[in-house]
Image (tube, rainbow, N blue to C red):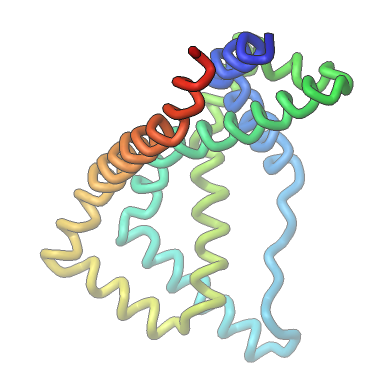
Length: 193
């Protein structure tokens, strides 16, 4: 019975992630907090602004947005997996399944809102990563990294990295699936006896 329930939940997991990301995106759009500067004095704030600007230039020249667009599907799958696990835990412990029901059968409107949110998701990723880079590197360091992406090999890397990332992610899923199948094979054989 539990195996059947698990298959039912896993079969519907694609819709779970769609709904989860739609809700997270709507929440993120409704409440975007201002990004804090690392220090209160004017010089530190100006330096931080300069670093954020340099980080923005780096992200543009490195085609960060295009690379992330490739990875959104993996983020959806990860969200689906996490939500599926939470719902299975709820089912196993007899808790209220109402929160899960909305994710199991998302409406056409929910699916459309998620699809329309892709640009906003990428905008949020750009802003978040601009802040992360600005906190870790000086403006001069970020400009130096950006110079690489202006070289011939840097431009080639920036242009091919979305496809490379897609191939790497695909290969990673295949490899992990193979090991997962091997790890569960003994249990499967044992239950058939």
